[in-house]
Image (cartoon, rainbow, N blue to C red; front, side):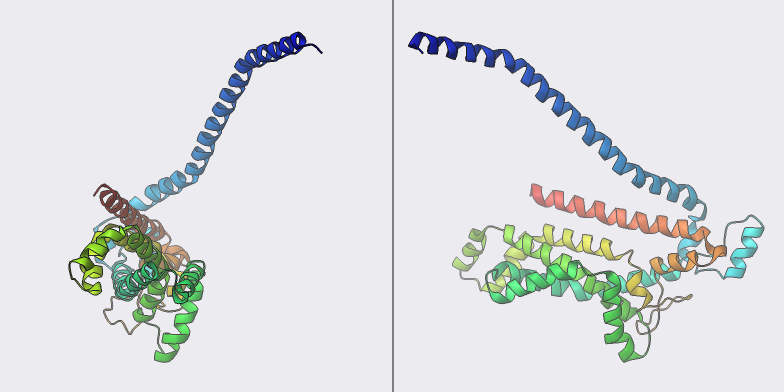
Length: 308
């Protein structure tokens, strides 16, 4: 083949390539549009169940959403039956559940937050040590353990020892569930702080402890606080561990060594009593509002921390 033929062949190939570009461009545009539409359809399909649940809770829960829900204890099954037969709103509320939830959350926070922050600081500062690697692996394992397992372990440790169900046992089980999230969020928040900040503090003559707790931790406060809020919102609706630790109670109690109710436990009890079934929706709506509010607050704090 002569050089003229080769040149001619090359020119023909270039012309063919240029001619095929519009076709390939149209194919890519069509593929992009198809993927875009598919993503929208899948997103809407994912949101439909969520909005269906919200709609169901609002429609069925607003009738019992009144002042009595927050100021009165759970009514008896007989009182609820009489109210249903007369077409009236079920009297009573879930004050005992709200009180129990807040007390057990307070116990869980008092236990999990200090332990989680100190463990997270250790993992961030000693990331290459063998102990840090072991703790990190155990933390990841704890995140995947079913909640009922926490309840059973705490039952053996505390309930069997005290020979009584209690709010203390319920709070400890929730605290164990909060620990992994707080540890990892603390580790990530501390790791994001520039090392030059710590070096500057040490260079000015401050002790390691002072630099850590007066400079590094306050600088990472946004991430720490966000992790704590998310951990609280995660355990707020837990039922399984409380069934074998706190047990529940139909009265208001401030004694942490005695059985205590929670909003999530009351929802389970209402489910097992047809006369109290209407309170399921209002209690679930309240729990949803609380968890939704905690998540919004966590997002707001996280956004402000990023800006600063």
